[in-house]
Image 1 (cartoon, helix red, strand yellow):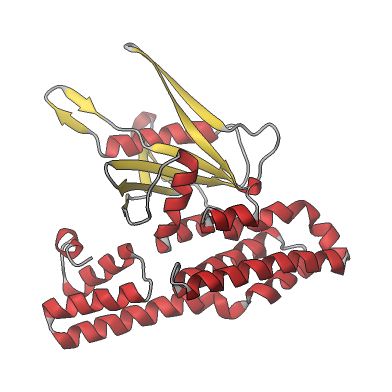
Image 2 (cartoon, one colour):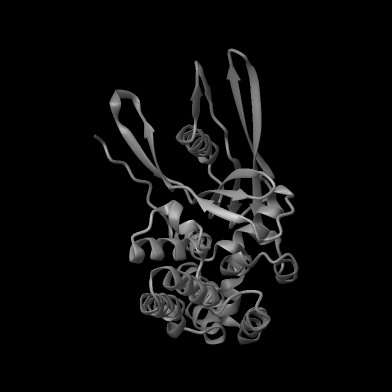
Length: 320
């Protein structure tokens, strides 16, 4: 069997990390793209992000989607998001392949009818041009008629810092540096202009600290956003040392690269320790309570209590 894997980029990795480790950040993005009105209290259920696409000759090709998940609100909807640094002609083809496979994974056969539900799909472009469309379209010509659906486009560079914080689009913060990319050479040579860039990142840092103190985001989420911002910066400004070090001086450097993971790891360890001491039923509840207070994502809590207490996925859900 041929094993073909699409290589992810640092930006893909940052995007997936934010969605999976700080999943509440997804909700405002979905509201913005699709015009939804989710409150933020809805349950997010992730699907496997590895899909095997059948090819001619019996081969399978493994593709990795950036994020496929359901949101359980008044009704349950499936979503599929991708992150792209820029447009390319094969994007819409890959979307159709992913969407079809996501739909087929949960298809239902009743009698002689196969029912598949395509997800609501969107792409986040980190760079865009005047020719970048606002939507991508897939048109399927079937024996029963023609069907069309849109893939929505979100352009990160269109959002100012004011927009990001007003709309709570914190997921875009690590990619905010893309809006300055064309001016890196200027910043490298001009300390005054570099200082203006640093001032913007001072605003970001202060606002994140404010949101944390207000309990709107957890310390873990704040650290992860800063950590991911630094990872994007390392890659996009690799050739511009003054830009890279200047922003890091404001946001924080190597300490924050592991601070969020340390908070998460120590919280899980302490929660499980106290849980064991209290007895199984009370212990699980205590573990969950401690981890929730630390801002550990629900999906991570579920995995940990399943592992520690040998619970089934269904049995573990009642403790959240």
